Image (cartoon, rainbow over all chains, first blue to last red; front, top):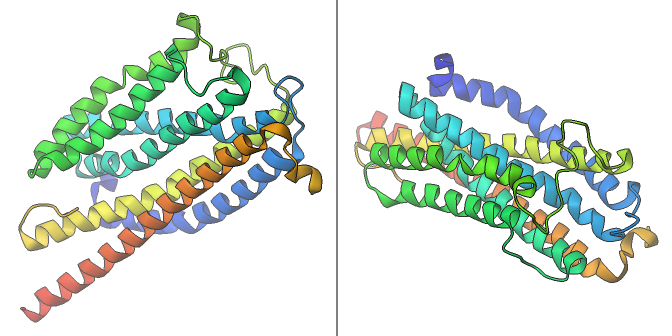
Amino acid sequence: MHRFANPAQFNRLADAVMPWAMIATVLLFGAGLYYALIGSPPDYQQGESVRVMYVHVPAAWMGMFIYVVIAVASFVALVWRHPLALLAGKAAAPIGATFTALALITGMLWGKPMWGTYWVWDGRLTSVLVQFFLYLGYMALWKAMDDEEKAGNAASILALVGVVNIPIIKFSVDWWSTLHQPASVMRLDGPTIDGTMLVPLFLMAAAYQVYFIVVFIWRMKLEVNNRKLSVMRGSGMEN
Amino acid sequence: MVEFLDMGKHAIFIWSAYGVSAASLVMLALRSRSRQKASDEQVVAARARRKSGA
């Protein structure tokens, strides 16, 4: 792992991955949107509104996945003082916050026609909102202190404390009586939704994943450059 | 194609969900890319300044 602590090594790896990730992003979004909007049938209960699920569910998955990435990076940064791990968390946070915000907004846009309301304070919706605030808090801590190392440590501790919210999000629909439906894809006994709807769901999830890789690499390079400039100028980190 | 455009009575919610998702992701990608490119140029300029002793 420490082999990649060298920014030059990271840049070489990123430059090799980037073209493939960009091609995969375009292809997966193309295929995903085709199946989400044209190639999949309407739901017998939800009608055409089921198509909102193909942007909502992968966004929610990504919001949780990126938070776990940040928590792992924070742990590595705090325990092993891995320089790139700290920057990885900082680079990933705005992407995770965007996906979490999209999960909340698209969920509201699905909730209004299906539930008759944009919002209810049930376990799932509230815990995802808490996740969004954790992202905002993490990013705010990075900007709150002039000392880059102190800011990174404080943000990392928040990320590690906040990771307890991930199982709460996942199991909130089982632990409490909620308006949000229970898990229908990530279940021990297999998905309960039809294969024609799993195709767009997984294609969009894959598209979001490679999109994350592309934007994450750009943001990592930005953070590495900022660190270089900071060292060159011998002053505080610029944002 | 006409059928695809006709999303029924909840079309506004469906297209809003796709629209806000696309706009947010495109904006985040463009902003990240432009900031990364600008920082690349800053590093090159800083190195050049240091080399020339300015």
